[in-house]
Length: 286
Ligand code: FAD
Image 1 (cartoon, rainbow, N blue to C red):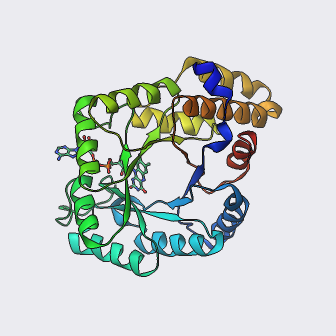
Image 2: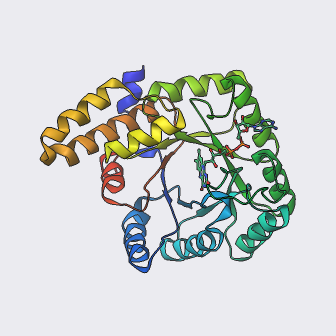
Image 3: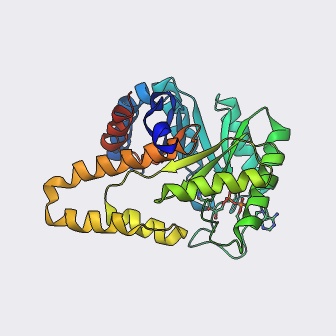
């Protein structure tokens, strides 16, 4: 049945793309090219990250508004609580609402590397931010989920209970940290089901290029790294000409398996690049 689902009706699964606010005029131009290329296939819209500690608050706001204008697609702004007072976090949310950005990915965030001691008192957990946002405006709120457990969590079950609190507080769906083994996503869906979660759980898809960097993100997040990917990209280095092909095939195979496990849509970590994300969309029938 899994094999059958692998090859049936994959065209129906929408794609959304995660972007970050550009740090220079040159990078801004590159971002607009990416948005223009990906808009036609971005049925699930775009999302724009926020730097640790709210550091890119203005950049996230401005980028989200401009991406929405250029693309005509729905845009989700990430909002991180840590490093912002409650007033600052809700002020940022009000400004987004006022500018027509009605979708928020509500996050606790990570401690900024050069943070003042102590950080301003704000929302301690993403669930507190979700509840405050839901009471503030009629936002469409999403939250983060961790198929292989958040690095600070002691157990996956405990972490999933906190995910449930975020959904009960008013979030409509959860977007996952990326996995490199699709079965980890499948197991997570099952475990969430056992915890009584029925909201959409959307897998994060990391385009499989620049393996050294992807691998180091995975290790930092506690994401399992399958041996076959290590072997594939180690061999690939002997023949750099093959790399774009290996990356495209590995990424699309991975995505197909996530779809087969029941992905409602795919959240692609495009990281402001378009060629491999667009190739993925094309290979999935867009
Ligand atoms: P929470 O849901 O609050 O959970 C954090 C930890 O606290 C977990 O271990 C959880 O189990 C625990 N916990 C939760 N509630 C409680 C409670 N009531 N009592 C005790 N423990 C609790 N970071 C950025 O800085 N900017 C971004 O734009 C960004 N985008 C992201 C997008 C996605 C799709 C994902 C998956 C992550 C993203 N992150 C981003 C990373 C995220 O900020 C970090 O992983 C952060 O450490 C946790 O944020 P959270 O919202 O999951 O926190």
